Image 1 (cartoon, rainbow, N blue to C red):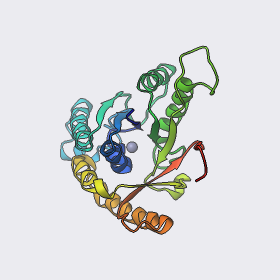
Image 2: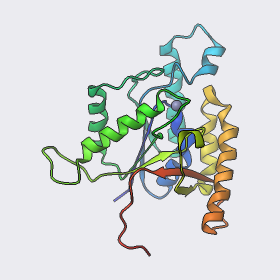
Image 3: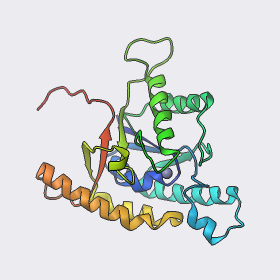
Image 4: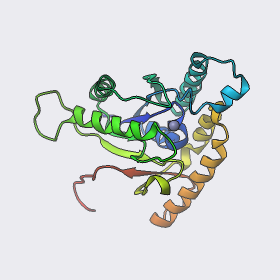
Length: 239
Ligand SMILES: [Zn+2]
């Protein structure tokens, strides 16, 4: 059975900066990766598109952002879709939680990757965290028989936010993305609206690669992505 990864970003480009390597690595190893953007980030994270042409409509920007994210996901071997909930501010309703719950229940991911609980620099990222937290629990139940169809609780990680310390991000999991770093760079190239982030996240992958080498002694790790586990992992044994 192929392992299934679900990445949930508040905005359409979030997955590229924070988890493109992890997505590509999942696919490289025969897994299935599905990227969901709760919105396109058309208002808050598309600055360069608005600067280029202030007469653009939000619908125009959403269309461009959809094409960019779709292309990036395809490069990584993943699918891309958006709930188009709107951004800055994103609103969470019971219907929207139910929509996300239905997707998780239908896809039955082995792993869900999303934002951190805190992000003092973004109004929508913590909302995505809350949405995922609620929907994951509603899809999986409390680990016992329930009155509704429940799935095996997916493992759940936060990917690295832009300002990790100020978002209380404590990395406990490093993914070696060395073999797919070229794909991450090509995917980042698709994000014309936020290209200033490309050099930052390339440097970060190199720095996290250094940490991964120091932690593990695995000298072949050149690039890595850091994540934080939100629930304990249950293993068959310690060795
Ligand atoms: Zn974002």
